[in-house]
Image (tube, rainbow, N blue to C red):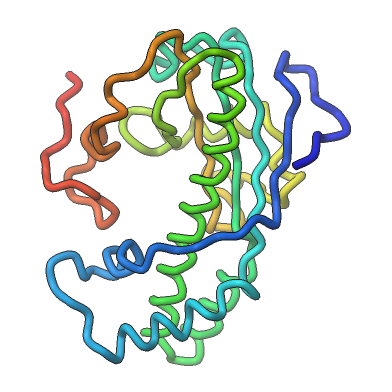
Length: 230
């Protein structure tokens, strides 16, 4: 882990980059992304999953940049209500896996491409988990408590809020850009926020899907309908 040369002008604590850390994907999560929630995958699919998983180290380059900001530096969106400070993060596995998936699809190897894409999605999630762990260690030193991490485009925090994150964090330091549609490039990237609270958040005991407003979602991790926030 190393600090950036310039911390910027946004009253942030020291911005940090983490990179080249080990990532281990959860095969059950990959199978869930592939649609095998209630039925077992056949042997050939499992073998292909193992085969593509071995290729991951050469296709991913885990990186993340994050910083903790005073609440006054973020906007007044309700998602920050109750926060003492706010941690923001951008992370990615880089573009190589995405390029490989595109090549497989163009060659007609659709199943291999779909499996590799699911592996990439799970690897990206693990990069975010790793970065979140690093953030939580710093939060503990501040004697504050973390909320669950949350990303633009989920629940009521619109995708346009990506602009806030990229205005405060230099995504270019880990080779991530934001396009005019507020989508990140490379596609296998995640941005998120964590509220720093004065008291523990009781909602951490629930699945994050419980608070999302998208009941029909292939990434959903619980069987319960979303909480009605109205």
